[in-house]
Length: 247
Ligand SMILES: [Zn+2]
Ligand SMILES: [Zn+2]
Image (cartoon, rainbow, N blue to C red; front, side, top):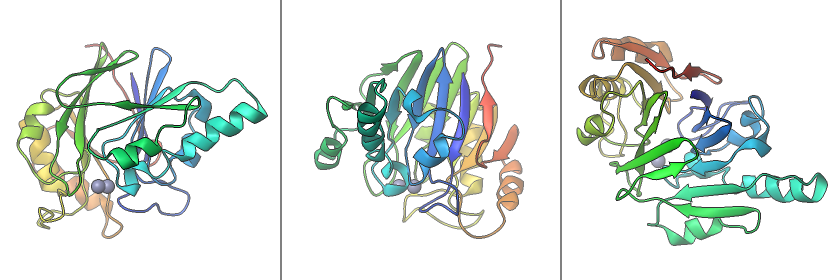
């Protein structure tokens, strides 16, 4: 199982880059976790956009979902220009039907629904969802595969339940919108120390900080998190990859 950072910015993308989007690949199956602004353009650096089998959206803020409907246009134009478009399903929660209905464009794009009540099997991946602390309905994701376990906090304020949901993850991907000491609880975001605390409590092997701020020095985020988390800490950049291997 391979994980690639397609985009990692909070809110809006810097030049040539993207907001939240992460590619997960295994056994020839490809899932895009979140699909924010600039993700489709940047995805083409790694795979053919036609090769995406499914998209799973953590929530509907534009920095996580703006390019989801752009994928419609890709599949439609592919159909009329080249043919051979791959079936695509976009999965989201069912707490905002107006938005979710816009994700469906049969026969090119199907809309799928997930809940925190039951696991979702997508190809070789099993997803389970935990509601996070954010101004709109948002879900953290645990993804299990025979190669290992990924956990993604999505956007969230600090909540200890996420450490439980991410227990023993090989890679713990945490949003990190703020620097140590900055309080994001009123806007549903965590800082570097809180991200590291969650990963430490989860007994995760490795921490990736993402959803990064447009101010300050990102190296400081790594320094701050390393004081709290005992494993390896990385800070997202475009194209950052992680290979899960059976231990
Ligand atoms: Zn958000
Ligand atoms: Zn966000």
